Image 1 (cartoon, rainbow, N blue to C red):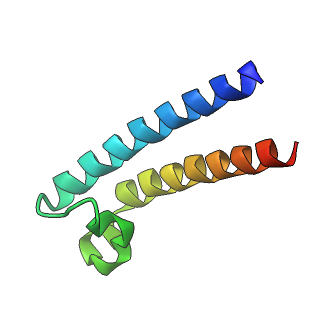
Image 2 (image 1 turned 90 degrees about the vertical axis):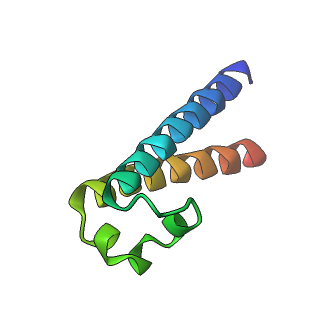
Length: 77
């Protein structure tokens, strides 16, 4: 159980770091974007066509998916 808590803590830390990295990337592209804007990045063509932003967004999505999978596994077991 302690190992699961440590994994969840590390994953949450990775997600927070990646979220900050993504926000920084978005701010370099368009400083007026808000956190809410990043929830629908394809509404902003400058984000949608930027390969670095899309890569960082994909990394964040993968980390969030891992977090959800970990929670689901803890509920099952």
